[in-house]
Image (cartoon, rainbow, N blue to C red; front, side, top):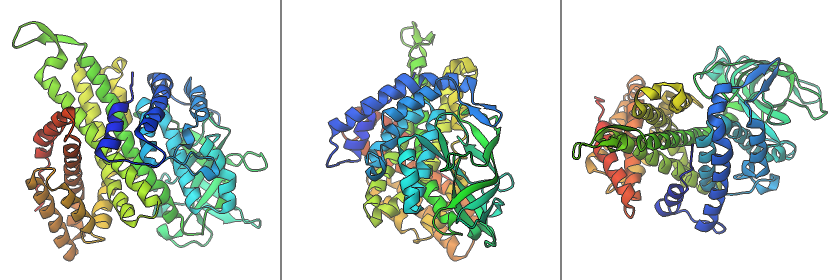
Length: 527
């Protein structure tokens, strides 16, 4: 089972990151989290394994979700959980992202296949709120925010992958101002399902006579059910059979002259897409934290119950949690989860400041986005794998349940721009754009929190990349991007754990392990 770590969440938010809010004291935050915890542990978590076993089923052009998902989604919406971070003007609760992230971690930890539906809906809300017309906001947002309708992102196509310049889906303008959308989209999470009455697709397509490559991409709203109540000509024609997240329908969507409505201006779709993508990237990083936490909890519970071997001291049989190597693996898992959690929550706090017009916070959250997305998702795969190792042979057997965490986590380094793409973004856009200014600010903050040799290493590494940029050696920079991002992220995690350990004994043990055993392994040959 899964128990949301409310105590750790609150400690990180308030004591480590110093969260304050005029209307949310610690007691109020705790009350919100306790209520969310009930739904996560009591309703969503029990469906995780059964959903994995049953999966979603395509029946004609309709998708039937796993048993219990419809009722769970109804409970989720009736509790107002879908509305937590959104604008009260459209029915949202207006709570800060800093608190919303804690709640969302619970959904993803309890049942990632379920949690993907509101995550994609969130991206659609952000896109329409930021770039839609007032009529589009008034019509779509109240129902998307309540959860009565759900949203999707329809981006890539079979021939395109991550290269959106290869998109072929067409949009032909009609006399009434609408467009006819024709083409096929793949890997569409919750593109079709039975949880809500309507599905609002955000679709990238090319208008007639649009420029080539990414400059000619526009963004359109394509509802499953049109305003007149008629069925739009967009259908699911296939479900992917995946390594994990079986209960989350990953659809191939066919648009055959479907009615769509332009969002913003023509040929600005790529810019609008990043409103959806940047938010989603942070949330995918948070998913990594969530599923790693669940893998850790499961492994810890098993280690405290499984009797095997004898104590070196007494010779008596002991649970495996008393074996030194098992203790090391558990501490490894716990330290990585905590480091990722602090990084993700820190980014959420910067999001709140940025929403108030703080430009420094906007720059910081942009800088943190590839860090959180990449480090936390790679970490999730590592932690889930370690969990299997603690179970031994039983970990490789589906019956134990731990293999699901690994299978589910494995998509995260691929989602919303692969981690290699994140590394390119980090180096070429976040480092070279300001010649390392923001990176140096973070490095200055790290000084005194971690061993100075690690900070010096990152400074030297970053300076080397800047020298390569002066020589216009882009290939060499690209070769170093992933190692540099990993080194930077790992050190930042150590810095944050060090701050968390100041007045907390359990975090002191975690921080010491992290510094002694993890950060010593970040050395990379880059010359």
